[in-house]
Image 1 (cartoon, one colour):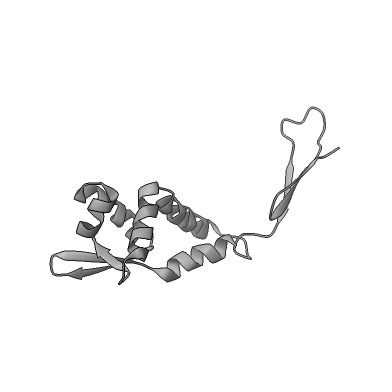
Image 2 (tube, helix red, strand yellow; image 1 turned 135 degrees about the vertical axis):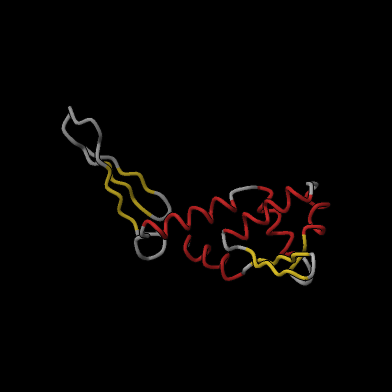
Length: 128
């Protein structure tokens, strides 16, 4: 007899197989995160984006940028609050930018960053 495990959004049904079966097949019955099944490229892109935000420093950077009165900052504004060197902050900003979560604007020798609200909103929508 199979067992049923319920979670918020889906039901996993464990299907019984023959006693000598190496693995018990699992039937997953839930709606895909995005309303449609992700293809390989979409899944890899989403994984890179989620990996970029799955770091406490990067989450703090996003919140610090959002908390700025004008919604943007350069590296020099972030090193103090984060307690990190300029090179460490720059690295984290580069990762967030490469993931499409930040917009970077060059002004002379300084780069100013702001959160791409559309990118964050799209991640939230996908996970709902």
